[in-house]
Length: 443
Image (tube, rainbow, N blue to C red; front, side):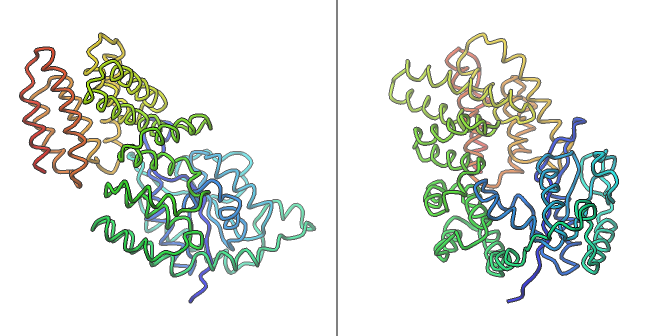
């Protein structure tokens, strides 16, 4: 098995706000420019977020950070984690460290004397001239590999400080980042398009997740979520090392799976614990709102109207809190609006946030590579809430075009049903909403 040296990449991931009303797509920057350049020089890129479990930071991420012979740091947006890791890198090792940033980045004064390679972004926050930048980065990487001189300003200032011995760490990392990991990644990505049973076949082959990269367990967990295999997610969580599940994002997704399986108390406890750790996000609040929303519907089915009212109020407040945390996340906002419609009270917050949710959704369209099903479904609900029948029917075709899994359409139809039934109880015409529900159900 070939021992491929690792190039650690420290950068933001996903889409991040640029501070000017738009987003930067760091995943696309990584995949289209950094990965090709690194692999072309015989290195294997490992991005910091691939070790998602917070409990593994010192055991895995820190190892990669100091043991990689070459590391790339993206200083865009002045991400505190990136700057923190850069300080560790400069202090502890004498390997090559390459700094990059998006165009127009104001590099902090502490790094202003270091060479920074800039890449270009368009108005939508996506990279331009990717081949040219990848070639330029590749040249710098090759030069770094051929030079034995340290580019750490700490090492240059204090040459007598002993160099940290990273040989044993590199051996550990080469074992972890094995060909087996790469094969499993590719198989999981392929099986995700087929179904949960294909994913389970892969899971059964894995005897010990602790011996694999944390990315493998996380990737499989997310693949089950996309397929709506909630019970598989719960079962897998019992097999993953406990420290993996300490990461807030996995806790959120586990709570989602528990809720979908009717284990409301466990789901609520996980989400409340995140809030207690100051780790809650708009996603945390959105899932908590869904937990209360499901219990509200269950109480209604049991004829317990008093209990149902309590859960309905809790759901609205949880969704509103999520939208307050990040108004760019339309999911908790649209759910709060729908449940306010159901509640039927004259809540002034409804009129305040409805245009904000609509603006948030449309703004996301303007800055993203394209719309998702949930973007389209959110706008459909907004039109229904605003009683804009023609706009809603036109929007339905856009929603159906993005529909990938039946459970997604069922979720939207369910929300529309709640709006329709609330209006029917108040004697309002709502048959046109049912037509849209039925179209969603057919797909």
